Image (cartoon, rainbow, N blue to C red; front, side, top):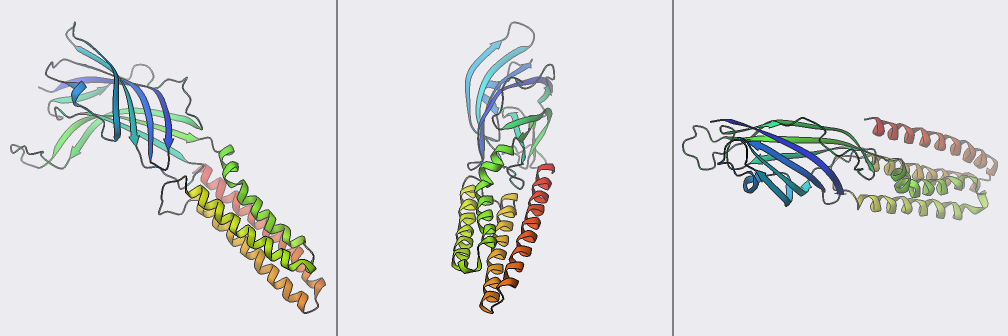
Length: 295
């Protein structure tokens, strides 16, 4: 017989979000109410996305018509982070609970929606919680697991799902990560105000800034998982490298004018180019950052 089994969850902590290892830790209370005494939820509890599950506390009440069990879980969960807009990213943490003892023909989860599903007092450092949505459904496995009685190699298990949406508080982290890149660009930009007699210094500062930006990008990339898409980090660093290259190109042209005894023309070219490059660079940065923070 198909028995509805009520399942509830209460998240007490989420911590140790690791972008490089694509994982996070979650502590939660899980409880279930059911009638079928043949069910063994404790030993057959399955969390498909978990790397590890530690059951630190368990209690059971069989005094009434329904069996009630409650357990405390500490899980290390794997996840795929979306880093296109990092550090203005929004992530969705997913948790799915199944029972490997019985498929959906004999077990159907019903969500316990009374009360809240997470402790509002716990704070996720560096993040804010947008929503916590619980639902139930079926998890389909395209195999019969060796059951010859099945006409199709497909098995469905009832699943209890939790989806937690979080948003990063990015203002401080953004400046911490990109301040070095912007200072490197400003050093290159200052080269426009160095007199024509110091062309060697202008080239030296610009090339040094170029390497500083490349170094800053490698440091940020080392803390992020690999991505085949072009992220905000790639965009801002690529933009800065392109503008520093423009500064070097403008310096080369100014040197050519000085060599032709057109120092006045070289100075006017430097002043006009400096304002245009700075204005365009600031506008493009604002555009890309605003696009990432609003998406």
